[in-house]
Image 1 (cartoon, one colour):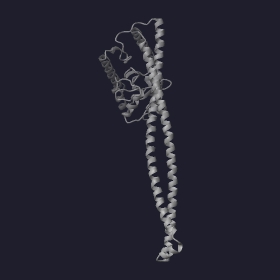
Image 2 (cartoon, rainbow, N blue to C red):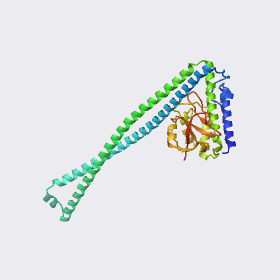
Image 3 (tube, rainbow, N blue to C red):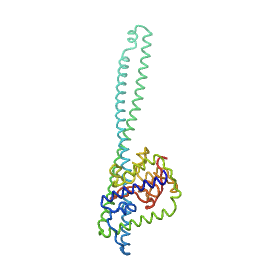
Length: 361
């Protein structure tokens, strides 16, 4: 995909955001800089002293939402682990049931052989010889007796193995049940932390006067613009290639189609997404399975240099890899920002980049 085509995609998506915001009573003029801004008028200028206080508020909010994002990753990871453990326990239950059935079958066969051998052995040697029509038949009977003894011995060995397998399966099942309970505790703790951070952030924002909220939005936008400008000034885009794989095109098409949908922590569509829910589902739509969380995406996917990034790559943000977005070309990303916001286009350098990863390689 050439730069012209990518610019057309970005322009079309931006127009979509503007239309979405206009319907919602928001200012289209803010769509490109901060598509999630709720301002309907130009914010008043900020006094020096007030700016310092609001800057502290901005930093606190950013930190609270970053912590919420990290806790969301922990929740999603625990959720994934919980599902895997539950599936393994279910599989073990079936294996245990099958092993018990097999053990019952072995016991039944061993009993049949043992009773038959006992009845034959209970007859005196002379009577067994008389009852046989010929010495050859008698000797053949002795051979069958040895075969029966061997069969019983084999069944007993099989029974021993089955019992050992049953014991092992039962122990593993017990261990996995304990692990599942621990994972569920981790998931509950992560959920609680997410909710607390979001509540704290919302309470902080709610404590501001309307004029302060407008001033805060201005500061937030200034901060994003400044970071993006500094990133672009490095001339990094001049070294980025235009190649886009077919899979990346499919993933990008999916991600762009979600623009305007709300952020939902722990969600992976179709009505709402968190940041990694959007990127994982976008690549899943292209037939590529990627880890569910941004931290796992950073840990498990192929790392590429920022100067070599291309459309469809995932940009990981923050030192703790708590946020992820999809690069759409020309210095822009599509992402699910944070609670209270909607999936949108933003500057790729407007947040602190940890690194780039590429699915499918």
